[in-house]
Length: 50
Image (cartoon, rainbow, N blue to C red):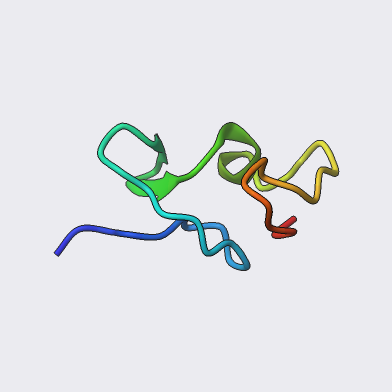
């Protein structure tokens, strides 16, 4: 079974085969993949997962 939601702990966004992948985990955007290192709270998909 493949991963269906973003690997960011609070993020509920869906991911696909084309999503950002880091260390075998998929993320809905680069901000989530970076662990919101820039201090962002929003992933750009209407959720506050940062």
